[in-house]
Amino acid sequence: MKSYYLTTAIDYANGSPHLGHAYEKILTDVIARANRLHGKSVKFVTGLDEHGQKVQQGAETEGVKPIDRCDRIAEEFQSMLELLEISNDDYIRTTQERHKKVVARLLQDLFDRGEIYQAEYQGFYSTRAEQFLQEKDKVDGEWPEIFGEVTEITEKNYFFKLSKYQDWLVSHLEDNPSFIEPAHRQTQVLEFLKDPLNDLCISRPVERLNWGIPLPFDAEYVTYVWFDALVNYVSAAGYGEDSFDNVWPADLHVIGKDILAPPHAVYWPIMLKASNLALPKQILAHGWWTSSGAKMSKSTGETVDPLSLAEKYGSDAFRYFVMREMTVGNDAEFSLERFESRYRADLGNDLGNLLSRLLHMTATYEEGITPEVCLDEEPEQKIRSLWELTKEETLACFSSYRFNQGLEKTFSFIRGINKYADERKPWKLAKSEEAADRQALQTCLGTMIEALRLASGLLAPVMPSVHAKINERLNLPPCADWGEDLSWDHRLAGKKLGEKTILFPREV
Ligand code: MSP
Image 1 (cartoon, rainbow, N blue to C red):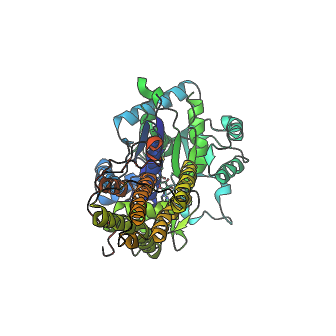
Image 2 (image 1 turned 30 degrees about the horizontal axis):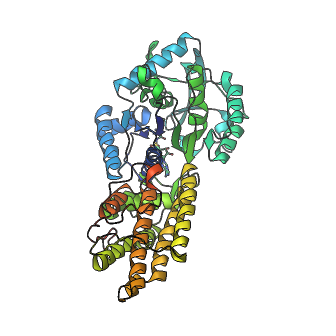
Image 3 (image 1 turned 135 degrees about the vertical axis):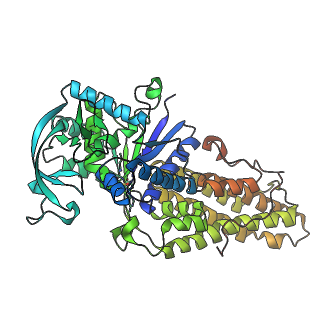
């Protein structure tokens, strides 16, 4: 069976991880986990982009070998993945042999078939952006600050025939309107493609840059870092091995909006087409986390390091926050106040209190055993139909990457369980000796336990540990299959529940 193959961008090995990197991994992880819960076999890959001028310069400044610096940065990124409970199946590094081999093979093949040619380049070059520039890149006659020092150069280089495929790419986008999500990003790419494409310079002379993959047909050059980095998606899929067809094409590339056009939406599809490889099915471009309106990065100098929140409040609280706050595709402003308010209100008051209150009442009134539900009156019917709607809507939101809306619906159902309790008032029923009140009490607790089990199931991809903790108290393993575990069937009746616990302590 072909796997559902999804990837994140591979992070640059020129700095430490920050919220932007963390968010992308969490978003992709949630999609991966949701697909596993839908019964798919998933391959989820992330990794590190290690070549290029910035990495070489960073190592020179530190006085270390580039590979030693990359090893250290790889460890930092991998500890972030661990901290955030990212369930990636593989971690690809562009300095690994398995990757270098694939880059060389694809380059040689393109060269042999005349898709890559040598030509003299005369023009401007920005070392900071590792990019050739054109007059049109100037703003008011000046090179913008982002390019740093721009020098005029003449050199021989190798070029990939990008322009030849421009019309094909436009037709592909027109024929596949959801190739890029959200839709407005696809429109932007089509807009970008209204200007003629230049062929892409895919080489850098060794005397200027030696930290790269040598061109297999000319040892005087290394490969341009984007050509190298994009290939990671097929090297991690096992290009050249028998198992490749079980993985490729990718079902989803998750990336940030800054690297959509041209790298992922133009270079990558054309590189694949020219190599006779199938295209990924979809690219999801998320927005940026900003701080005072500017893109967040390690150097923004935030007063609070957002990643430290995951250490302090637990990874699931952090995962919930980023998924609840960000509309996938738009930017979101990071704020500690919003984080704390979500932690206290949604997680502490709505979810955490529900669990501890329910375990406490079941222990006090029913010796910790989930009672049978014997009544089916209006309050029960209302909460049950709210569940059916919540399940349908949440799953639809998750499938279309509207996680913030899906979570909003799930939490509104959780508040609905609390409201149901306020209506039935089990604490009052427990004081009565009447048989009818006893039945109502048992029905109320049984219904609440069932509703909490189901809500916990929907939260599984976003808060895997909290989900597992709730289920452990309910005497259940973590949910493995949404097809089976999201139906209202009172499967916990007669089961002993665990001790009361506090999921989200007020003081951390
Ligand atoms: N190495 C390239 C990607 C190569 S993929 C073949 C790169 N690396 S990066 O480290 O700069 O960025 C990695 C990912 O993090 C990108 O998708 C980028 O958009 C994302 N983010 C970096 N800062 C971000 C925010 N402030 N907010 C959200 N995501 C952003 O680009």
